Length: 447
Image 1 (cartoon, rainbow, N blue to C red):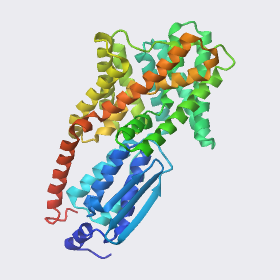
Image 2 (image 1 turned 90 degrees about the vertical axis):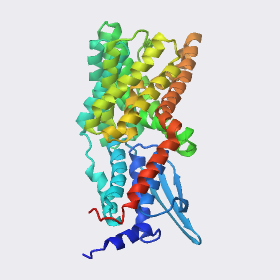
Image 3 (image 1 turned 120 degrees about the horizontal axis):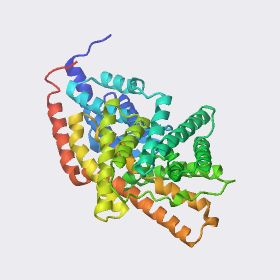
């Protein structure tokens, strides 16, 4: 195998059009990995540009277009233009992958990787990142839903019943997917199973707290990551990607709601959509429930094991701050939600470098404990039963929908607030670090 000198390696990385098709292929691979792992469009763009800097491609040569299902990159200079694109058909949140891509690019700067080494390591990432087994994800989803039942003032019985119902719903959805069912049909069947079993417990056990089981047993299906990303993309002017993510979220929530409605179709519909989930007192049970929900749902998003404890604490912080200002200071639910999300996000902005983890890996799963989609699915459930609603029911339905949308926006803006307030500073710090690392490229091989 031919051995390249350090000068030859650096020439490849400093001359834009040397091996340009390989370089563009690497950029597409990075974009594809991040999009399919649940990164927002702004982060995908910044990671592609950072990788382009490492490979010697000036940013002014690049035009990047990102939609939900396609990554397109054009490089244009004088009379030369090359356009490449790649499809992104699969979308499964994977925080470990987002973290790994970012770390790999920084490591390439620090260790002065050659193009071949960088290309090889990017190609190996999908096989190098471990994924939690399906049975562990099922247990985590059930624990997360149980934590929410506890968070919403349910008792131990409600927690245990929610665990059973959610576990059955998760594995029904997984089995349906393996049998080749459409994704939305699988979600509908999973929610049908969870709600059917929950309603069985509700009918045969005379306990008021079991209403919380009906509220929480399907919440693990709410797509929190694309829901938050849809708002983040939209407010960052990535309109096409944001709208597409929002439509997909509505399809998932609609499928889930349809399955629940099917389970209750032949029975009197219990008034669980009127169950008050807004806290009126501040209790230790809420902190326990928030920790369970955040840490457990982080498993579903394949967050690294070492980050689960910190994500759980992040969930405690955002929920506790929200409930504190809601109960003691009379804030509205969207306003309190924004303060909770922003507080947690700012704290993790400082801690992420200390924990050597990308900020979104900690922030996004922690924010899921605020349950951005719960009012949205209750709104859709009421729409399905709109003929049975009286005037007060219609008013409550509109209130759920409006408050739900405002809470989703509040969470997304709160999560993004550190970048909004300190974007120029953070970007300048990254550029300084990159320039320092680039200046050492000729000093030693590092391999």
